[in-house]
Length: 125
Image (tube, rainbow, N blue to C red):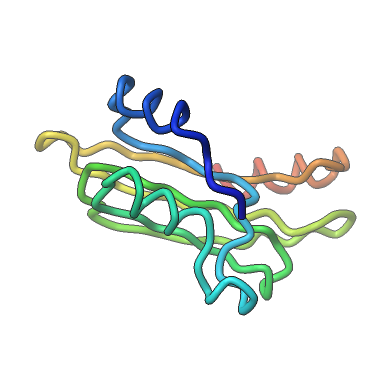
């Protein structure tokens, strides 16, 4: 994993982003000590809360949420696909200044077949 440039960190400091969603972060592989880009960014940007799943072992590349706000609850799904690769979905509930915020993070594949899109949208309803 290459280290981002100092300009990248300055840009993040100026924006003061409150959350960041990562798709295809390929988290938790043995070759990188079961840590992924989510842990790297979590540490270097000072975010306090992180949630990521699914691993490459689950036949998907994973998705992650890194946030400055407390995560109240999490539901994780791996949606199977009859024609493509599995999709990961994380449903998070955040406490944003005492306001409950619901957030979906998903990755649906680069080569999605129309049947996959139909089945996944029905699953999320």
